[in-house]
Length: 249
Image (cartoon, helix red, strand yellow):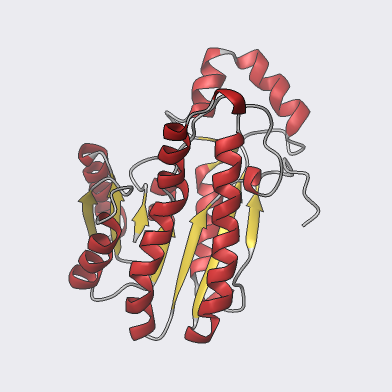
């Protein structure tokens, strides 16, 4: 089950898991893009793909998604929490409503989904949860990112404690921390098209590997963490950033 699955990193994760013959339940807000993604994956990989168009921030949606996955696919082995967003602004100008909106999307939606998934995973003997955080949950993200930074740090921290508590149930919980990832229609793609020279300078100054990351590169790390090849990896936060981040941990 993948949230935020109709575009960008979420879509790439769905494709990477489908390549490994996983049956999928995809969730996103926009039904048209969701159906297009599902049709493409069915045709390309011959796997079963179910969809639910819903707003993951609504408190009743996570439990409904987990139950739908259980009913339509027979269980839930892998949960990928990819839904997320941002609200930029100097801290002194932020509002309670802005904080609440992004906390709901970047943190609470994932916590609710994890709580709903745990009983199903326990009943089947285990599972894997992977949540998409950010390198700016591991270190300072700069001016204008107080809300984003806080929510991504909170997600990494919560996942770590979940991993501790759920280890005895064979449920692994990890986070992935992407750096600057460019995909069609994404924020970096729009910036590159609007000011290519400035973006060349940004890459030169910030990303030692000399380019933006691709959604597929994040997706393949998620697929590894979801697989039995990562059976001894839990409570980890893996940066996927082309050496963009500066944390020593």
